[in-house]
Each structure stands twice: as structure tokens, then as C-alpha cells.
Amino acid sequence: FVDLGYGAEPFTTLESAARLRRLNPTLPVLGVEIDATRVAAALPYADSLTHFRLGGFNLPLQAGERVRLVRAFNVLRQYEESAVADAYAMLAQQVVPGGLLIEGTSDPFGRLWVAHVMRRQPAAPSWLHEATVFSTNFRTGFDPSEFQAILPKDLIHRMVPGEPIYDFFQAWKRATLESIGAKTWGVRQWFATSAQGLAARGYRVDLRHRWLKRGYLLWLRPTALFGARDA
Image 1 (cartoon, rainbow, N blue to C red):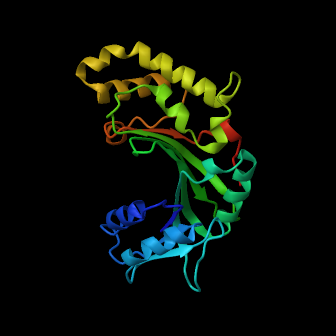
Image 2 (tube, rainbow, N blue to C red; image 1 turned 135 degrees about the horizontal axis):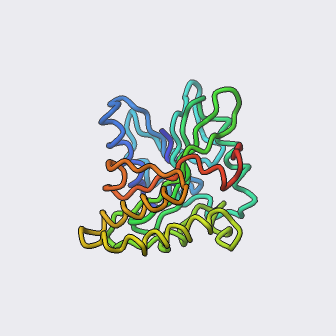
């Protein structure tokens, strides 16, 4: 597992390691930062399975290391939109077939985030866009428009009429207004009911309660956003 661009403190790397090692106690975890000062500050947290190295999209892997999952949050928002495709392509060269890239943006406190879930294709170093995920912990209530400010870099400048992401949010806002009665049973129920309204409008969203009750709206295979979305 690689946590690319963990920030001023290695909290996301360490938290990810703790959670993922519940499933695989011997999972190697690598935190990567482009800032040498941040790498130096994280080194006291390193151990035999947890490493911190200087690098960027060209991951600083050592001989024999293989990557199955990359988390990259609040990284590409610092770049121009034109740089997104090259970054995705570079990462695809380094992730094993079937591996995952989770790339997106969050608010400063992690209360809200939006991320693409990409699957490395088996036959070539390219990505299949499996889902775009909208996540909230409900501490700010529920309003679809709050997600617009934290869209991934390749979407945030497309919030204009005629773009699929704009149409998606218009549909979600209408579904939210139409289901406001569900708020009587709590904001989580309102969130879930709005997802049902999106599905009724033809959007391929995951309606399983296990995701919705936790504040995850999964827009599955959103090919309308980028076509086939091969990087």
C-alpha cells in the first residue's frame, strides 16, 4: 500500500496501516512525499513494515516491491488539470494488474471527500474507472452542493452546464429536495433516499445500505464523465 502525498504529518499513512493490517498483519506500507522535510519528520514513525521515502508520481520503490493500492488525496489539486492524465499514466506503470488507485480531494478535516476508484487493467498499463465516491460523516448535515468544492482536479472545473458532472449534481439536488421528508428519520436516511432518487433518474449508484448508512454514495462506472477513461 502506498500513501502518496501524506502531508505535513504522516497521520493518514499510519491510520491506513493500522486499518489495513487488520486484514493483512504483514502488509508493507509506504508513505511518499515530495517534501524532504516532511519525510524526515515522518521517519521516527517508521518500522520494519512502514517506510517513508522522498518521491512523487514516479514512486520510489525498491527492488522487488510491488504496489497493489495507491491512495492519493489532495495531491493533484495542486497541479494543472492538464497534468492529471500524465500522473495517472505514470502510476499505472507501477501498480500491479488488478490493483487500485483511489485519487481525490477532501476538506481540511476529512469530513467530506470525493474520490475516483480506478482499477489497473490486466492487459495494459491503463485504468478502468470503477466508481466515483462521495463521502460524508454527516457532521455538517447533508447538502450535495458541499461536494462541489472538493471535486477531484479533473472534475472541479467542469461544473458548468452541459458537462455530465454538472447534470449529476443537478439531478442529486432535485432528488434531495424531493426526499426531504425522509429527514424526519435522520440525515442518514435522507442521504440514502436521495440516492434512490438518483437511481430512479437513471444514474448507476450503489443502493446497498452498508454503504449509504456510512455516508458513501458510489456512482458506479461513471463513463459519461470521461468516456472509457483509460489513462
